[in-house]
Image 1 (cartoon, rainbow, N blue to C red):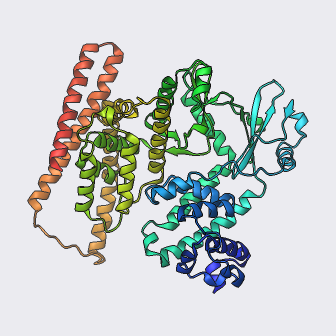
Image 2: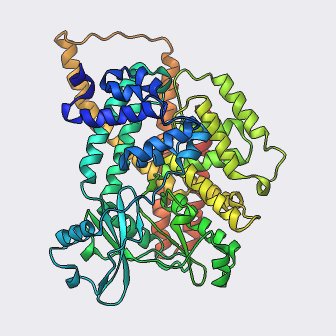
Image 3: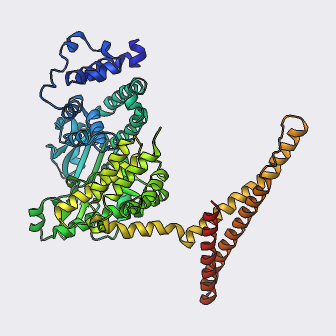
Length: 548
């Protein structure tokens, strides 16, 4: 029985520690619901709830995460972003999880560095400070000086952390399976899927080569941008266990006195920070998912330098367009637009009452119908949307959760710097531009070309498919039943589809030929071709929408 529940006997001591900690902090109801009371020792059962006196349930959950170590601290930090899953009282408490945990001995850090570099630290750096300047659940940071005089921060992974995390993940997967089986209220949120997503997140954070590639990618995105500074990395001294990157000084973005001492306008800093995030999200689809004040520094001249590249979200173009649709619909108080955008983003659930969901979305947007765009607090609006999603037990894709968190965080930081800060007004032009990109001639040309290639593939395969089907019919292996009801309508639909495809191919030809003519110097003729192509494209879009 224990082997079946635990999976591996080697995990039994850790199981007991986790379950005993839950019980000691007043979560014995969870242990009982999972039917795991038998694993907890009698002495531990006697201490049920001893640490829960006078503390509310969210506070106790935070203390549990802190006591159980790095994996659970990181899990709590991830859950603090999931207001679609947990009430605000829990997410606020979990957001306070300490990331400045006790550092591990500097001798171990030096031993890891020597092992990774294969030589003494004196041969690598002009100076190395053994005292860590920061410590987190997965790593700690030491300052060093390169031989060319540049200051660097060495992010060193904690010893044995992969082994500990791997064991904890196995246990969490088993607990998630039990939760899906015995806790119907949690099963709707698919605990196993959440644990797998957490596994992907924490494994990426433990591999510093992933963070190095992220920094490189951000450097290319902001090359030549004078308002943003991305730290350099030293690949020679970077490995999966160690990341060597530029040491960033400057002033915390929320240090108003420090900003004024730099001669920088806080309102200008708020605008620059917002533009950096908006550019990452809607232009590149690769964005900093944790832009809290501790992760943003301001350098002389008001240059914003993001820190900590371990947590990033990623959105493809199609998802970015659908997010643009959602935000535009929210700010325009468009109920149908919000519902359609949520469905397009796969924000769905089981046994959802469509009428009730529509009513609640209507009440949400009507709350803001008398407000101008400048008066809308986007963080409050998004918070209410997430609360609505949780109330109806809808599931949100993880990267969309990170996006909402980033927007809410950056708006909160911006308003602390400038009470008149308005991220909604900054978002609107970018959202409209993104929404209109789907109708650009080049986009339509690519879609028409892809459609033509699909038709060509189908046409190539069709003769063989028909031949095999006819042979099967002759041999009696395939029975065909003809139902001619609605045949006339089917013919009309096929004819309409064929005509639509033909017009699409004509449009593609017009745009390509016009481009070639334009390069040849016949500007007027090329413009006429473009005009005709755009007109046909608009007709085609109208015709397709009319046809359903």
